[in-house]
Amino acid sequence: MFILSDGSDLKGVHRVLDIKYIKVLRLFMRVNGIWPDEYVGDTPTKWTPLRRYLTLFCSTMCYITGQLYLKENIGEINFFDLGQTYITVLMTFVSVSRHLMIYRKSYKEISRFFVTEVHLFNWKDDSEYAMEIHLLVHKISNFFVMYLHGMMFIGVFMFNLTPLYNNYSNDAFTNRLHGNATLEHAVYYSLPFDYTTQIPGYIGVFIYNWFMSFVCCINFCAGDIYMSILVFHIWGHMKILINNLEEFPKPSGVKSFTNIKRNAIQTVLYNEDEKQQVIKRLRELVKHHCLIIKSIRIMSSAFGYVLFVYLGFHQVCGCILLLECSSLEPSTLTRFALLTAMIFQQLIQISVIFEQLGIMAEKLTIAVYNLPWECMELRNRRIVHIMLRQSQLPLRFKALNMIEVGGETMVKILKTSISYFLMLQTFATKN
Image (spheres, rainbow, N blue to C red):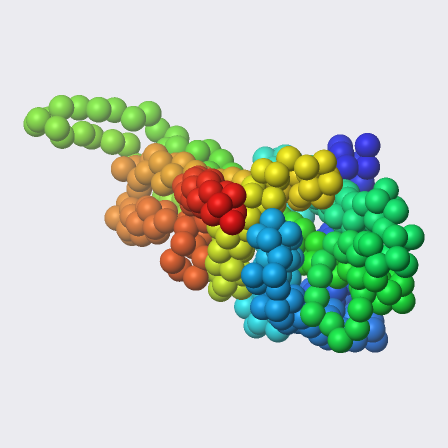
């Protein structure tokens, strides 16, 4: 039951960084050195720069040598066998793009802003409803972190153990001595030594593939988790803001409606004591709304290019994975079926999560309009009018301000992937 939480794990927690799921996320992101220690109040270890540069160097070399392998073997190996390398090269490219986030000023800014202001732990004492939403988002985030990290381990083990099992079941370790077999790998590179028939080279690449699989999966999964948690908390802020708008105090007097002329309405206004409370509440609402807008703006700057690359990866990689699985060979399905399911799951979950921002934005507009603005004096009506105009601006997240991240884009990518898959399957069959 480690992936589930009833909120009891928050007892004794006095800061955001001590929350369980934050600790788990930080632990894995520190493996690659992409956790922004110095910007969220943590003390970086002396090994942080080394891990950061080492994993970036290894990922870059993995991408370059994979590209060279493709160049050398196009036309020499059939498309089904070469498709595995296309997938790994694309995944490595996405991994490198995410690793470079740590050097962006906006990434450091959103990390600090998230821990110090956005996280609902900082707002839990504002009201009973804020505490309720804080616990709800905490449970969702805890489950999300534990679940995806579990899937990451399963994916890495299945991806690397499958070729090892194939080598063993085909007796490739023995047959290679007679020149009748080559040793299978999870990832192939263009290297100056033989690693398909010689045991020393095989062991070196085998270990390197395990290491790069963890590095790549951490960049994929931890990156998705980090962005998703940010969205969860922004969604929680929007829920709290909408609730505060809906519970906005009404005038103490009884409203009376009199038809003096057609469409004319007489309304009871707030009294002098209530006006001060109204001004205070409106300022709090505007401030909270500005916090939400600022959070999305900084997120767009920090993760815009990352999501742009990510959506492009899904567009290309999805059809290749479907093509690999279409052979229906047990060895191929063992390796690629789970990977295909995880890749499509990540696309769907990240799209659905970001889609919630757009859904909540529509509810926010309605909540602002339903404020008792007709009972306010002119200056407060102007504040409500400005807030209404601001709430009508789309809060949907866009990758590089071009591609909207959400359900519509997800459906388009899935449809296009299936279309390209059918085209590639016809091309591969003919060849």
